[in-house]
Image 1 (cartoon, rainbow, N blue to C red):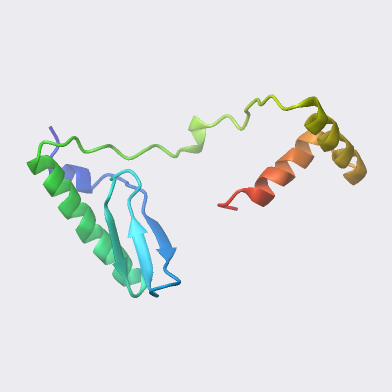
Image 2: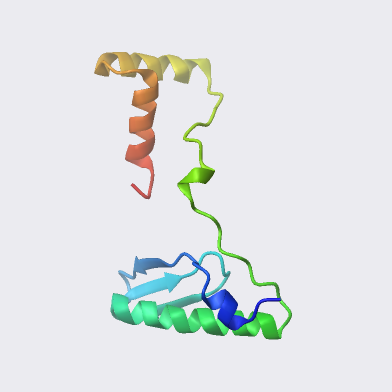
Length: 120
């Protein structure tokens, strides 16, 4: 069984989001449900997040709650391919738009996905 120090060393992903309403930043560890903190600056938010992570892990261990391991985000876990079934009418529309742009339908779909991906 791991202790607090063991879990604290693991590479948990930290998400930092500006808070437009209150100012400052909200921070969280998605792999640790409910582990959230804030700070007026990014540096303060990160420091507060580290404190929150330590307290979250400590409380989970004390209460006998399993502490999740960090999710693996290695690119090696992704092939770069996925298959999707779409209506024939959408297939036709995508194909026609790709032809108008002078690119393949795969390139056109990649463009549309990357343009609308919230992380891009």
